[in-house]
Amino acid sequence: MKTDGELISKHLMELITKRKLPINRIATLADMSQSTVNAMFEERSK
Image 1 (cartoon, rainbow, N blue to C red):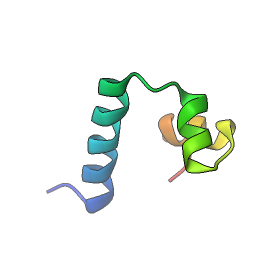
Image 2 (cartoon, rainbow, N blue to C red):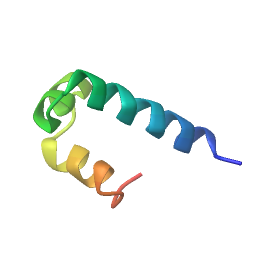
Image 3 (cartoon, one colour):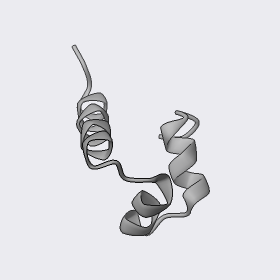
Image 4 (spheres, rainbow, N blue to C red):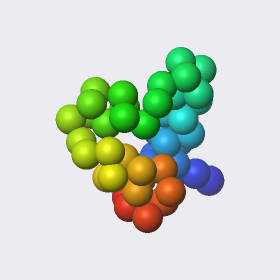
């Protein structure tokens, strides 16, 4: 059984892929640094 975090992550990735959002745009929308968002996508950060 997948955790809530895994389900949210999967759904978020589907939306990002569908809308073809670049990492820097995601970082801007989330008010986060691009390096933090990169770390999240590379699973170095939770």
